[in-house]
Length: 479
Image (cartoon, rainbow, N blue to C red; front, side, top):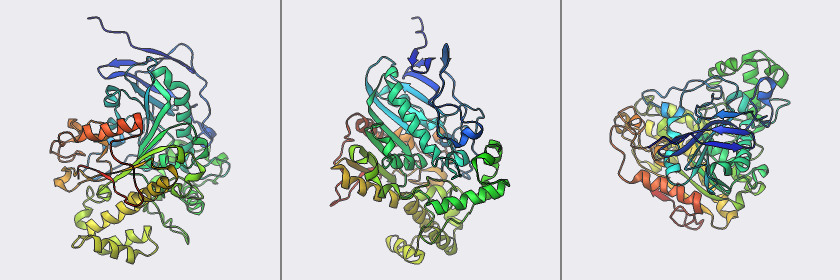
């Protein structure tokens, strides 16, 4: 049988040629905004000028400038992807569709995590084959990171990485029909920093009408920095670079120096008289907002958006176990972490100890981090959404324990992703240092999780009852 020709799609910016495989059709490196260069790195995203002829959509794009990340003995390359692949035109999306045929299918737009400083849509975990197989058009987004994406700077709009995601959603609204998607049935979903961005979209007036549903996987509805905290980061970056904290000065600094300065920010104390550090010192960048998204949902489209939201049961293990912290953490270490994230660290630790009798210092450290980074902000966002949305909130809890690192990794941050994307059987996720460990994934769990995400994106119903403030329970996966 002769091979079918590669598909060509006409978009408002020009024609693009993709590739066809057994799961559908894939179009890569499609620009949703102009390349951010020079002072443009610190401006709102601008429209892409388009291109003549037929663009090659068969190869991945460059990635945002970013440092390498090390998680000790755990192989996190499927999550972080190739790291920084230099090139100017990285404000792009990849599209994986069953067929670019005007079919009006549900659309899912994924926003990757990485602590606001790393990650890209090139990560192996984010392959869209399973979504395309199941009738969904998957769009994965790159956005600005680190200094260009999130540093507060005089003369620059705030939260430029979030503005990029908004620009990508506008691109989806104007272009996804050509790839077989329904622009009126869009679900935006994200994990970790990407989930925190999705939570912020719910409170952003400019996001109204761009999506019908949202999924927040291990994000933080209270993860934004205050302006005072952001200025502390800005002062530290400017001092390390030896330049004034203005767009004009930063426009002359190459991206290599923005990446190189990040280690100098490690451990920066962001506690103020009114706020703790919502990221517990793990990242010097986050959204910068006058109010937390969980407290500002009425300002955005949240009341009209269905929400699926949840966390893993041992989120903090990712930041403790791979580095040997489960064994080496002391009581003083636990107190130091608690002091970063709690106004009354002694009382917070007492509550954690009461909930976990006999827990080791390493286990307590993981619990403190998991609660502060993800669980508390997720609970507040879910409760706030349930109050204003009229029964359109669904909660989940993911409890499958990875057998990685001698079985100690457990239901850590990121472990749900292979099940959401239905790639849990891939060999590159297994072995003692692989994200899922040496044991095979449980039969049927990926089909159940992935199926719930697809059902929610299609209909707003993931398969269980809506979240009830009077009986706040969550659907449990693998626990």
